[in-house]
Length: 430
View (spheres, rainbow, N blue to C red):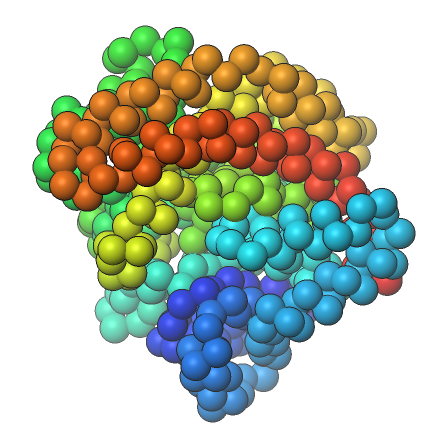
């Protein structure tokens, strides 16, 4: 095979064991598939943690076909400045801020990975997370790259000809396999399990707020049951993989791979302090009916204790509330994409990025009433839970207008970045 791939780990926390494990997955990809693997560690940790990571990276067992790139934020910033300058785009400082904001952004860290993967000449990006680990089966790690590597970027017909099970529409065989992914087992992907333990009804009320407001109650109930649970808790016992149009609810960003043709056209939302802001491309691939591989090499998810500390708790809950508010805009865009369907693609089966920019711009003018209602519901629910949830509701009450403004400006920023993205990609390749 011998093509170059990027196996990426963005992190802002101590994760020495994960660094070793991801290097082992890279060695497996090189050994098994003959891939040239670039391990890309984007490190936003504090100085002592980053120094420890550098020590671990320096001591990694060298593997043929594997090159490790460990970049701190200053190195990432220098790369971005050069790229933005070369692209010659207006408002360079705004672009730099959206690509490397001062606070947590799940989309921005992956966008940096997309640009760096392009600069490194990689054909695909395979993303993992620092708060997850590989399952073991018969004493061996269960690596997702096993299913990600063979078909990404190739016509779907080639995968079916090789015997891969499929439920793909027979009209789609010429389209490229654009993503491969699985989910996770273990703890909820969003750290709100305590709410469910405290009050099942309140948990339903809060989680159902990420559905469109006009959904019937039954559909919301089904969404709540499925939300953030991944693939449950059953461990891996043997391989299953299907060529399909992948349902975004069946995969997770800790266990995903994209063909370069997807992320070269459209970035992820750069929203700060917003859980789930990195899931947009899953919806885009689905709505454009681009084929994908859905497999069962799920990663094991765990929560770091920081999210439950006195400072970590309100920060994390705020990210969750911002996720709920972002849905007003994203549901509008998802509806537009679903209605567009195959029209989202050009004659070469590539995403028409200009249509996405159009839908994003359109959504920024939406009436905020639904989001005011969401904040009211969260306020009621959290006060009912009492304790630190009630204290967080007080903080929320003071921030209401700011949160409503941020949810809207996040989408405007995304439209701006999406419009600039082709020029950034072009600049990074040169």
